[in-house]
Image 1 (cartoon, rainbow, N blue to C red):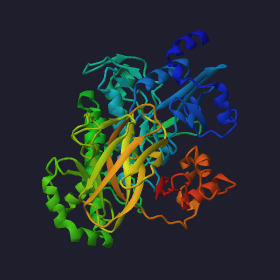
Image 2 (cartoon, one colour):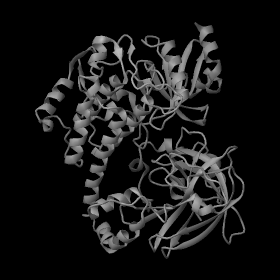
Image 3 (cartoon, rainbow, N blue to C red):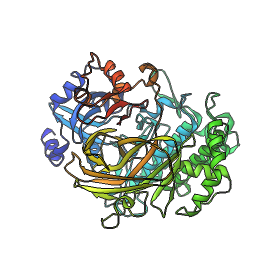
Image 4 (cartoon, rainbow, N blue to C red):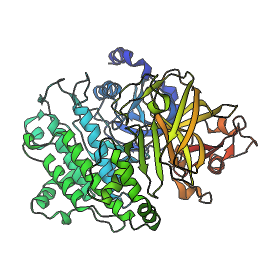
Length: 586
């Protein structure tokens, strides 16, 4: 078996991590584990891997595990080929010394089942988590490439992981089965596998597996989030003694959803139309006939509708905020005027619906500028890279670009950009960010980039050292800050290169209102996971401080960076904001 494993794994050598590195990262597996599953215990540690170096999740096959070499090899095969923001990423593996170990990106908040009854998880967050997971599962069912369809076979809340920003990622493909490529329907005969309470009854009875079996399981997860509890009850020995799904379906049929919905007076209630949309699609997933169950792509659309309804409710509540209400009333007519030329044309029936569209962002200026509002009524503006560079450059249309002109693949040569704003809020301090994506996916949320640039009128070049991943999947690195005295600004920026050996996908230049920071807030009130937000090279950056800052502990270093310090070679100030973002200012 060992020889077979090594031969099979030869084509994945780029993912191989040495056992000694794993032992060092986990203190020889003596450090406290962060979780346990069917495969074995999961540890947290810092290792070098296929995407760089960082804190990762290390899953070690247990001696008593029901899973083994087949699941180990399947996980490597599947996750090395299937890449999606909502599917957990495999960073490496170790197969030596009798050990079988998988290394994943760290989803620091753990699995969804831990938070089903959490009073801190709002309905907006619950809906967003459902939507993320649905997108991941939809991708596995229909990857839109030469890849074959994957049927997960063990969809459950325990296999949906959450990162620091509460983004959901489908995990644990060890039991998944590959279907035929380019076929509308794949039926596979196989012994039933999965977890009690989540398994499609037809799969359990007939041993015939289809992608609709996953849809059923996902419907159970939706109702778990709706009800705030697991779908099954276990006895003292861990055996399932009661499954709640039949009761939940009965309450739906009898229009008694209020008897089962998760209620907590500390969070905003679920908006009525969102409740209807969400409960309807969950129930349809649980239909007895597979033909009556929706495709995952339809589930995604319905969850998007439910989330939009919930966000609209939050927009209405914003009108109770006097600061926002004052700003909105002053400029509502201006918003109506500038959005007449939006691309595509806007369709709204009320000011509240217009407000919701502006929060999400609308394309103006012939589709070359993305304009949006924040929750304080301040304007944000991103100008497309095509508008900044001009027609002499070549652009490429991509599915993820917001702009019709597409993106520019920047390889590090010197290029001049001409950035013209039209909609900034006067008297507001803005951060100016370069928005892009790396050519290859990164598993961390902070990456060194060392982007070198020069502003118009300056003799010396500046360097933006770090880039940060945003919630929308794009990356940004701050160039500088300035206070805008007018809506229209004319800025020239010369980009001179960056530290990567390949190209990056440039999207545009964005102007975001600067968030004020409360420097008196103690670390314990900021974020329980502040250590994970510190860049791995923070010591090297701090050693370059203008005044030779000193620290004795990592916590003390964090406090210094929060307050900010000047870098000696480029006269920029570095600090970590409340949410963990490493930003700079001149």
